[in-house]
Length: 178
Image 1 (cartoon, helix red, strand yellow):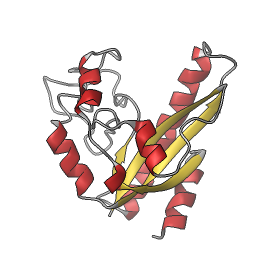
Image 2 (cartoon, helix red, strand yellow):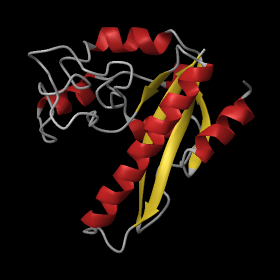
Image 3 (cartoon, helix red, strand yellow):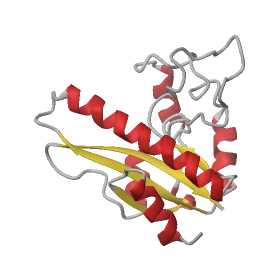
Image 4 (tube, helix red, strand yellow):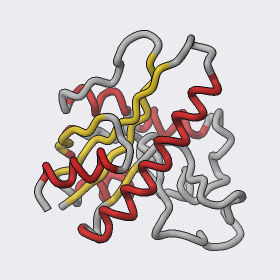
């Protein structure tokens, strides 16, 4: 499947912007992973898609380095103001749905594709970590931050806007494809 066809598939899944990703531009950074350990999202050590379960930075980087290309996947929305949490939550749901739909479809075409998203996996109401294996490992999507990635840096390095102006919010994911 050619890039334009994959881009069309991604857009049909609900993303507002799609751009080419050169995986050589992805820098895995310890300080990003360290911010995960601060547990501000309350998922650190509680979810298979998050640190430490997702693997150490070397393991995450080795996954990334198996691929040369990919796509950056964005969902952009409008906010009434910087306290419009309802719109933020709704936009995150739209982004997660697009990611899950896209992951299902792209893996039919590229079974080895790796989809990396935003935040902890939310497929299960309560994650089985650490007591039991992941119930849906084939559907789990880790976050770019869990992989140690500075999202804005990757967007900038690939000439894709990250900030679309005041009153906007953008959720970002990516897919790594051979």
